[in-house]
Length: 429
Ligand code: CMC
View 1 (cartoon, rainbow, N blue to C red):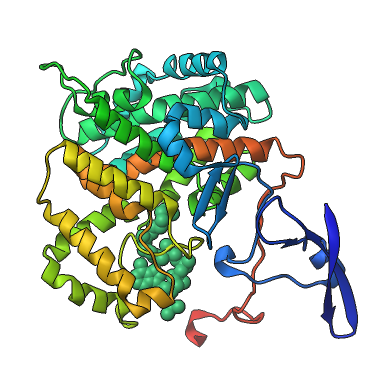
View 2: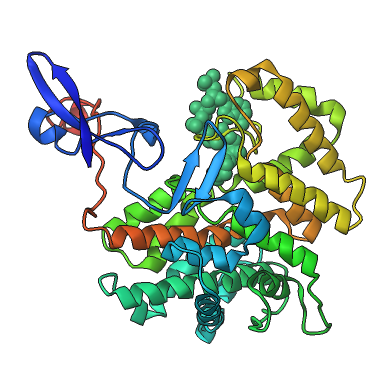
């Protein structure tokens, strides 16, 4: 509701812009009627100053380095909650009672298997396909299998699609991994918790008994929790934009996965570990710091910087503690990648370039070190991010579809191309 009005003057005309006040964060100018009234658009490439929607799900205070899911700080959720409880919170807005949690867990675990026919899709991919490529294709293909949960106007179907996605994306991600290493697919086990089941599907083989280490499962669960949602980032906005046309939820999540893949977004965890390995030894760090500062070099320090966090990324803090715990647990002491990471962080945080530009380690800086220690290849890092973020995407998608203000997303442009001109025959060009 607007309780303030901003005035916009263009030549001799003045326009009133309602100022909307959020629960938290800066006020928002409502420009929805601006084009109709003043015949002007606003210009904001990269949406650095534009709120695309109203949302009750996640809040980030970039200056204070805070992240809340439904009002609960991420540090508390990472320490006290677990991923499926966080999924419930993101989807339904409140922490579940014991009964609600048991019911939700049952619903999710009953959907963990994929249609047997889907196995054939995997066999069509090359073995060396990146698991993200496989994931985009197979998640998109879910709409060809689960026809009874593609009607976006039916709240029950939306609910079933949400549960199916949360339940099946880990199975599909694990299958993508197994396929890439030439091992048989491992079926889910519903007696295991969500994170343990994922580790089981990735690392067990039919020929041997596999015991999931509970401490590693807890670390895995924490990685899922830390990535579960992050308000209107590029992939979430992609899911919302795709969904705004009425596209089915499986197609929308596939679009989100495609967007997440880029190295500026979810692909940064893979790119970061590859960068740390390329640096290799502590003495080479200054060379890479210099490259990152060189305007003529496109190189950026992967795992550093964030559009919103200008203090620190609270997820990175928890992730760093987790990395220490996991390496300790696995008895990994002289990990050269970790040494490079720690030293790089120290040097960068003391460097005027990084201080001035408020560039801090983000969530991807330490997650790769944990995942590598657990035995995942770098190509699985971004699929694990996608798996974790699926609940955020689907919660945001459900919020949008249920919002009466929802309209198809359709940005405008500042056209700077040629003026109208006549076609010329080839001989005259
Ligand atoms: N290394 C060196 N310089 C950097 C870096 C970096 N990692 N990040 C930003 N800068 C510089 C950038 O060159 C620019 O300098 P100038 O003002 O002189 O032109 C300034 O800092 C502002 O950066 P920006 O690119 O305008 O900021 P942005 O908000 O558009 O981009 C970002 C944010 C995350 C895409 C960017 O910081 C980046 O590419 N970081 C590396 C990739 C990465 O770690 N991404 C994961 C983000 S967290 C997880 C997720 O959301 O998926």
